[in-house]
Length: 67
Image 1: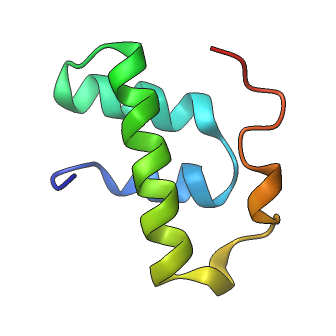
Image 2: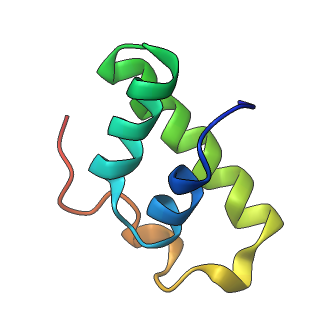
């Protein structure tokens, strides 16, 4: 998804899922569930494009987050 605020990538890289969801919703006006889907897609894109920028292993993404 293009046009997302830069803070979304920073929040995903820092494992701050709720902040990323909020920024996506504010930027796009989408629902929470749509924003969760966007975060998941963007997380996978960032894992491919910038694997060295992550400070946690892939299996920890979303730990403690329940929707």
